[in-house]
Length: 448
Image 1: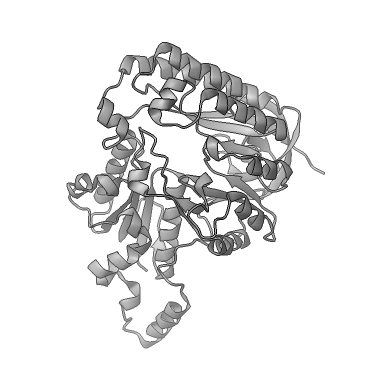
Image 2: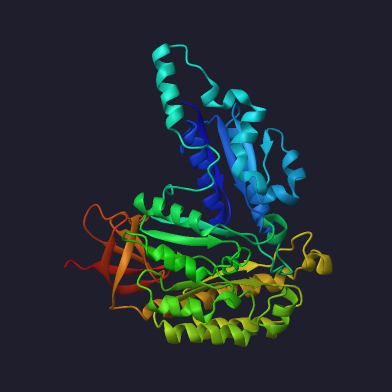
């Protein structure tokens, strides 16, 4: 049986896209291998959100070529859109597939290398040939663009939207992902039903700009309408939203989250900066006050909601006072987690055209250290609010560092470690939270 190996960098949408490709390969008879053995085909799904992501993607490509000298190496994902020349310079890359053709990866592969298509190989033994033909008839269409399970996860990312037209001045995403595009509702519901039937207990609705969902469809449909339809699917599961912009968190969504029994009480809302002048330079169409008011509104309606966010440090023109405005806003909203990034100049973006590679390295280093300290303090404060409370945890598996402990997440995204019975993976377990540690909370399983 031919073999395939996958490497995925970047966001939840990329992880979803890899799962689509994985199921396409499985449908035509490929076996995935995760160990160090060479594979017949290696697929690298790249990211280009930062310079570090570029470097990581290129390094993974080179590593795949070294470790699979006789295999074919296919590169896809966001790095291929604007930087395919860098990839072409790497000897050993056999195929480059851009994002808009990612779902046709088998078509391009088998067109260039027909011998790699297992369904065109005729086994010599008549009985083997009969079995192979039977399997071929049973297999799904290899160009399917949906998923039916999610490998290695108790949570499944379900992409319902792609593309972005916000054009933040520092960001390449609209250039590599294109304009907003929404998946039709019937396709989403069909896919969600398959995922739930596979045993998944949490669906993460994902998109490059999730709040844009449905605005390009005719007739238009809102994100909340999608959520309501998914909630009606039979099964024991919960729904989580991936990253969503502040301006897309409207009263309809807040109201649905407040009333729903299945939506997780957690939103990841990117902040990027708490300074109004920097927000304007970034082309972020809200103010610091707007962001703070939104978080206050969310907590008034949904008291136990967890907020996580993103912050960029060292954007050109960020002063000490501007940075402290960001610090003060973070302290005011006390997020459960802050994803902190140093500003990364991205060629072809408005910020790059204006500032080039300008970066105050010393200031960035000092500010990163300070903001990480503040973020850790906020995370600790956020978790302490839930100590001595009993909460439902979806168990993901054994903790790697503490194998005697199970680990999982509450619906409001608190990572919990606890000792418990055997066979708890992918189960909902009631746990009393007892002790907040950096990165997680220790709990005790409640046996009813």
